[in-house]
Length: 318
Image (tube, rainbow, N blue to C red):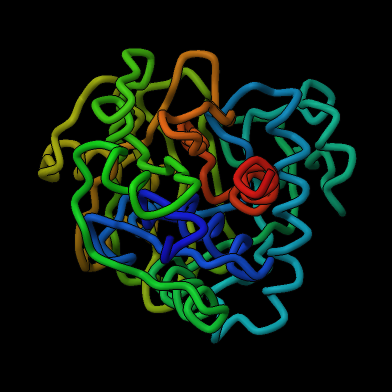
């Protein structure tokens, strides 16, 4: 066969997995419906944090493995899109987080004056914040430099890929619901507003894992990203003006200067949430091939991308 592995899906999970495989010396091809900068991953606010992802026992180590990689990539932010940025996560008690939190350098409980009303307590940390359009383009270039091939292609089943590679890796995100099929996979709609940054240099988050409405802002180069929403089973990709207005208003209650910031654009993405958490397992294909399922990362695909990719690559290369 002309390929060792075909990865279906060109978002952050698929592209990172493909890069790990290619750098192990395998012949890897990515089949992606969209260009990397048009995927759901490109819409992500992309602060490293284990948000809306399970199972917890695996997600924590995957996130920490990715944190180590992003820490290295932050040495060259202009090229990789990864920067260390300080900020506050309101309403979170560090003692109630998983064991992974003890390994995050500098994570600490906030002083009262560090968290605005009405949020009260929280935690402060310096975390990787990723400019996703830049990062995805850089990651594709790294994949191709390792000999990988990126191909725009709509996939309607795994049979065609299995005929051209001994291993297929399913990183199709929300599309896996129909491809597998998997009725436990459901979209969680996230809407963002991009505004001119009025001088904010730190991120802020207040996002309960079960809340439909969240509050966060992330200072990215050339813009401030405001969010957001977590609307389960809503597949609408058109930005809603009333939702956008509410997002700006919630963020402006934390930082009033946001209210007057000029709007630059709107973004909508569908997080691939799955009952039971990430599916990461290998199954046999007819004819002796292997299909590795690697989807269902919810709101933390960026956060766990490198840790998950190493495990998926182990399964694919077995």
